[in-house]
Image 1 (cartoon, rainbow, N blue to C red):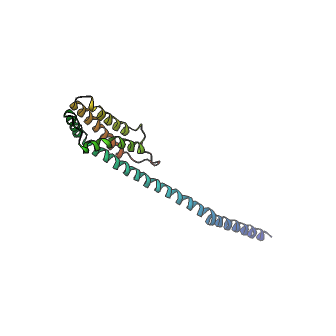
Image 2 (image 1 turned 135 degrees about the vertical axis):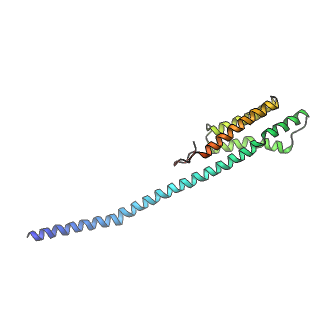
Image 3 (image 1 turned 180 degrees about the horizontal axis):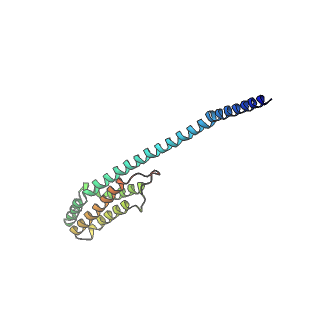
Length: 168
């Protein structure tokens, strides 16, 4: 009688182990694998999206640097044209028309409180002051603010992209 009890427990143990094995391999295992794959795909997607955002910001900051690089020259041309009573050249007018929209594009990618946006606004305000002040004073102030903007832009692009993807 004892032998049958042992073999009965053994059969019960074997059955329980078999059921647990089926559950783990047939239910829990695939669910765990699926969850793990979704999590990895989500992280990869976020990394790729963050990299695209960083590339987009880099392109925009490059555009801003190019636009602002001709600022001092264009300010001088505007001053000379104004002193002669002439309208500014079309390329100078086109340059001036790009300054505000580029700041708005920066605000689409960075919060208004971000140091890069504030530095760009400082440069734009220095440009707006050009009509009221001696041109050399304005150019000097403009160049200092442009250099500050470029330093902050460079610093922002060198910051590691956080996992959540927001550029701080």
